[in-house]
Image (cartoon, rainbow, N blue to C red; front, top):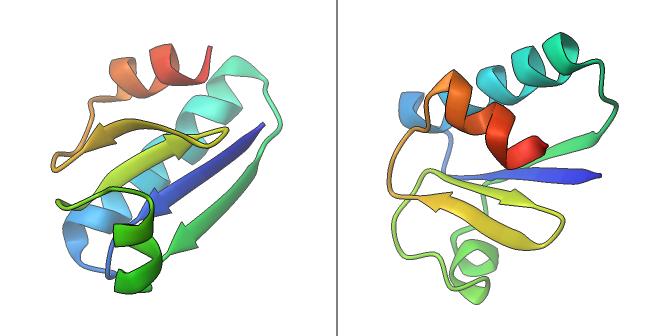
Length: 76
């Protein structure tokens, strides 16, 4: 599984990354987690509002910080 957190590095972008790591640990899953901060790369993926969460190439959330429960659902 590949998980990407898209955003310029603001506090709204840091929270989903921490939530993803916590969810992966809680669920016992292993995934490649990366942060994408390049605005051009973010817009190429069709994301206009950050932060965004992408799982295996599919945008799961954009323009908001998903709850820990939502993150777990997105990863299952």
